[in-house]
Length: 158
Image (cartoon, rainbow, N blue to C red; front, side):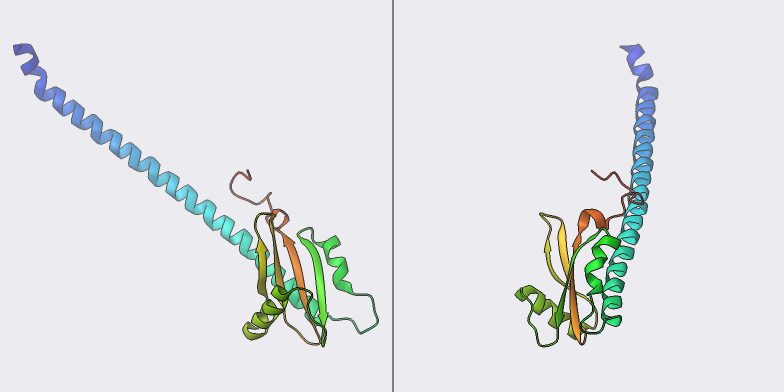
């Protein structure tokens, strides 16, 4: 009994120091994990922002370089150049969109002066953007699996 009471204070000190050391190690590991996550999140945000800007630029280029009437529509060749573009639709002045969501997005695009999201089918990994322009407006459907440049993606893809 006397022996136990003799080692009680050093044992308590050892336990307190061990607990404090464990707490410091856990905090350091959590701080490192948080820093790694924030770095990966910034990289992912940068990559996706670059792609979004690219999509806006593609639609703006279509609006600027509209071919004269009677020539082959250049926008139909875009899916061959950009894997993320599934299809491109054109609405000439006076015509109507086949889908009301495209017409509503065109109005939002006209008001904002930039492309507008028509809809997003996240289950199938697709979304559509519309750019209001004159004499024609354009809508493009994108594949989210192709939008993400997986070779630059900072995290495991699946």
